[in-house]
Image (tube, rainbow, N blue to C red; front, side, top):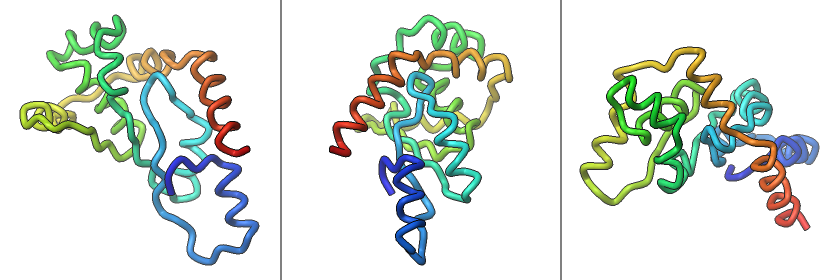
Length: 141
């Protein structure tokens, strides 16, 4: 599946679909962290796969990311990737540059603390959620 919300999945179940999808690809990053959606699908055994894990590079200068990256001697992209992995999501970053591909893969040699994970979770604002809801509603009309 791609971009399925809880309601979409429930609708499939109600429609009597016999073979349910095993992966749902949605935008997952600390700036659009839909915890309830991710938890719901993971509890159903659906693997969550992230797209826009790196926010198209638009968050690399975020002060919170930069602070955590400095602590670990990592790039902000690697912090975003590690956050995604620690959330139990499949992390497949997009890049066409070999050096960035190599950098993006180096997210398994460190672990963010619980406090750092919570701090990064907090980067999702209510405005971001409302904007997402508005876009989603437009798609459904």
